[in-house]
Length: 516
Ligand code: FAD
Ligand code: DLZ
Ligand code: SF4
Image (cartoon, rainbow, N blue to C red; front, side):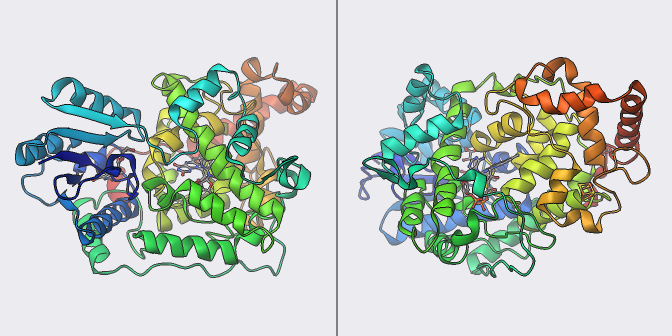
């Protein structure tokens, strides 16, 4: 055999680096389903089914093209269930002259690949992943030049480099960022469109049965399963978003509504992250929709992908491997059990955990301002929060999950991603959603029987973290309120917070796994 070309579950792009210069007559593409990847955190059932089905369809497409694919299934009795074990077995089967990989999305796997380079008796090439606008080397150079301190400046640099939404004189519309226009709650009477969901074909049904049998103790509903698992399906989902949702995407990007799991969001992150869509084509299509969709929507959407997604990845690779060990706010409480059960009287949390369980999806503001904000305010240990986010979302891979959770949400990195914590009380959730209307708590109350846990914990968070946050100029306003409180008021808040955390937010008990 010529080259053995490894394609991982999040590298399902025909043009991925390891497949460039493929010689179908001599080369073999290796794809492996291994339990180690499904279990290093216990991924949501639907996430596993999505990835395995997308992998199998991708392999089918390659075979149709005449490419030789060696595909190891999860139920293959000889499966060693690790990447390293399966690469070793494949080398024995094919005796290739070299192994070609694309750099992976996780530090953990890069370590693995570097061991292959050191230990295996053949040349192991790890190619840069060119599916991003900004390569790791480019980001590192920008970083050294001091241009990656804040997302906004990095984003402008990326706009200039790519020419997306640019004219000769500068940004289209004369402004880089239209975010101030993008903070509207959902008005009464505006119904989000029905979303395309994709009925499982035979192949996906087989995978669903496999996941049901092998991972019954993992979090999440397996069915109904509605994700696209092919490139054609992912493209259809993108077009559906562009025509039916993008025009409203900007205005209602931060809105939340009971029973509306998707609103105007694109639902494409699983496709982007596993490779069925590329960031470049998504941005190009969005820019082409300008006119049919207003500029604040198109710019807002492009910023998420060209700005945030690329910035987050750059931070991951420049800060690893030390990044997850930081804990700037010294948060150490256990993750409450209700993150896994959804059983809580907090309406907002029950809604956001519910959509997570049903779809392996929640939209950004739910992740940031509800489940994330609660974990920040309650002082949950970063590693436990990170494990949850990595497990429960179909789009979660460490390169994107970790900086979002550790940095953006928990401020555990001391400010690498954002200059201040996103901490907010129940008033924010009340303004941006209808959740509070049907909740047994009152977002305005910080103590007492109806005290909203977000509001109580918000003030408690400021009190507990005063030594660390008071000096931050962007926190001056909330700290003026804390200073204006009497000692008695502060003590009452702290007592209410302690009561909530011990009575209404107990951690998961041993033997609890059976519950879902
Ligand atoms: P849309 O709202 O339609 O946005 C379009 C696209 O922009 C997304 O598909 C995504 O590719 C990109 N994007 C938007 N925000 C971000 C961001 N902050 N970081 C990276 N890309 C972004 N996104 C993931 O892809 N994987 C994760 O594991 C992940 N974990 C997150 C954890 C937390 C705590 C938070 C606050 C955000 C996280 N995000 C993650 C970012 C964002 O919430 C999701 O990308 C988004 O909700 C996916 O849904 P969508 O495709 O409908 O997004
Ligand atoms: C997440 C995941 C799962 C559940 N299963 C597999 C698998 O069986 N085979 C595979 O190649 N990839 C899988 N993945 C995705 C990998 O975890 C991912 O490629 C690495 O984390 C690097 O980002
Ligand atoms: Fe959430 Fe508080 Fe509103 Fe209830 S009152 S939905 S707990 S923010």
